[in-house]
Picture (spheres, helix red, strand yellow):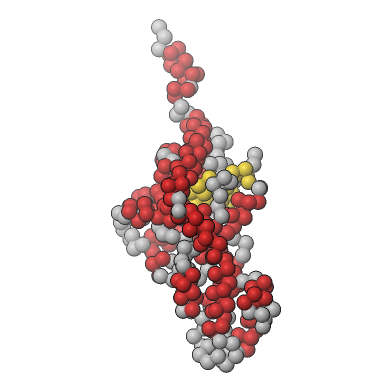
Length: 361
Ligand code: TRP
């Protein structure tokens, strides 16, 4: 059997550079590698509602934004199925059956859920739907018999929980579900791109993101005000690389060719770093360079987004068609799940026959 990819994002905002280096770029490479039988990319609106249930408008407005971001980076509906989670009602049915296989204690031990509960100040009013979202995520993955789930490190506990559910289901009922593997980013810098303020992670609430849909001017402004090295006051001062956001971004984005094009005094990033740490290299110069590097990466993405923005109805149609295709697959798996659980009564001729015999005469 061929390999199948399923992954997705919560539509709580536009996607940013952190998403891009951490997952989107890789997805496009995987899509174009030809190694996968099927690739499904899901906009996880139902999961987003588990902690935004009182703000459906936010989720509703962001489906199209995420779809535009997907298309603009090169996810191609001819090669990947792009779909919306809530439109696949089979996922809810699977979630309901899997709930029997997971204890509450196990859910509460999930490190990602634990961290998120703290972050959201749920304290004693945790919505049940929220604690259960790892189960629904297991449904997302298994509904498509995904073998491969490209995700960030923070999602590893979800994949582990999915694997446990699969093993339990297969051992109690029968071998229907497929145990997935996580596929992590290969590049350390790409695992967690910091925000422009140097904080651990890009996050909308911290206002430290560079969005894929930012204009050239917005990107430039954000780069020029980026956090660098607070000890590097004078140009002549020796600079530090650790925690220096500009260099972290250069590590993630810059290639030797960029020096030839924008900063020919240096051959590569090592030379630039060497000069910076020695002293005599100003922040403005490295920021201008980073701006050029980022604009080169973002220009084609921006241009493609503009094209799709001219055909919003077409983008909705891509999602509608994708959801229809995804639903057909999930529905097949759900039938197999129900048969394995022996709750397919009306197709179970042996059962009906046995009961006829039982009540004969
Ligand atoms: N939890 C993921 C996130 O927050 C989104 C998601 C939902 C997902 N279902 C998934 C990712 C299934 C991979 C597979 O980013």
